[in-house]
Structures are given as C-alpha cells and as structure tokens.
Image (cartoon, rainbow, N blue to C red; front, side, top):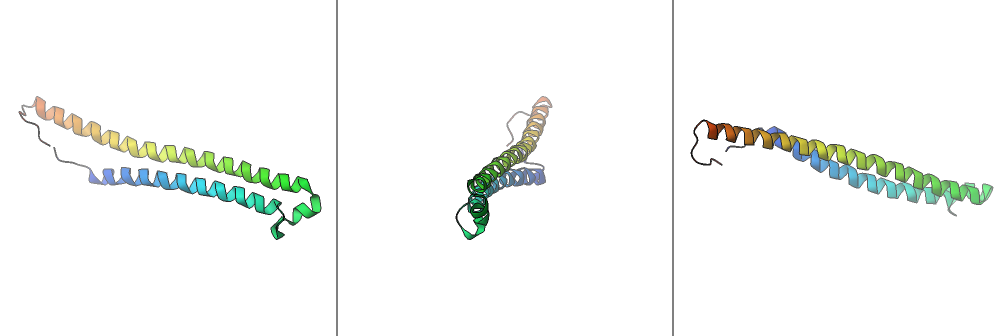
Length: 115
C-alpha cells in the first residue's frame, strides 16, 4: 500500500533525532558542570574562595557541580524520553492507520496484497 502522511513521518523522525541531541547535550553539559565546579573550588585563579575559606569552599564547589550535573542529567533523560516517545507515538498512529486501511481493503474484496 502507498505510504501516506509523509509530513508526520518527517516530524516523527525529527523528534527522535532531537531526542538523541538533547540527551547528548545533557551529558556534555553535566560533564561541563562538574568540571566548572572543580575549577571554582580548586587551586586555580578562579578558585580564590578556597584560599579565603579553606576546605569548605572546595567541598561546596565540587558538591555544587555534582548536584547541578545530577539535576541536568535528570532533566535531559526526561526530555529524551518525552521526545522519543512522542516520535514513536506518531509512528504507532501511522502503523495503525496503515493496518486499518489494509484490513478495510481486504474486507471490501481485495484479493492480493498491495504494498
């Protein structure tokens, strides 16, 4: 049978690709957040708080980076699931439509498979 609703197929594919991009961006952002937390708490010029406040600032910077990374990863995974599931739902609706159309064709007296 002919493939219909080409725009929906494109939208479903775009949503799936966008889901992977969001997940990869979230992972890279989380890594960057941990690195930034380490920079602000370490012995670099950016970490001047550690010279003023000692170990508490080092711990706060690292914990802040890790906490932010965990939050960012959580949001990225949720967004990935929503986008990917939406793309799959579009493909599911298209598959149901194709199967329903083919079944109706057979019930009307179609004798061979048209694909």
